[in-house]
Image 1 (cartoon, rainbow, N blue to C red):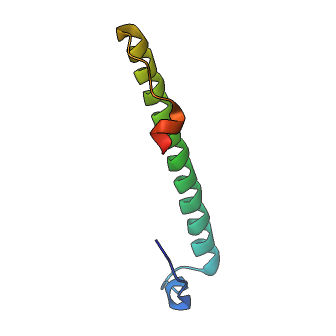
Image 2: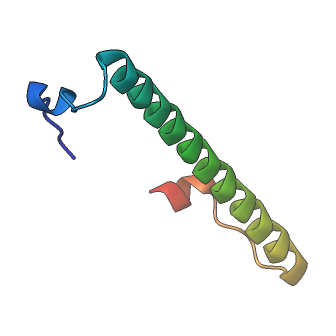
Length: 68
């Protein structure tokens, strides 16, 4: 997705530039945390599937095959 900067969007009545910058930093940190959580969840589910596959004797696909 392509986002473009619009100076008018930085002007929010009742908010200082510092408050908006702090909010932007907070949103970015939250985005990074959510991405990390998603990666951790996927890794946990892949490990669970590998364990289950070993229990039933089905070989798990390589990670390369899953990503392609």
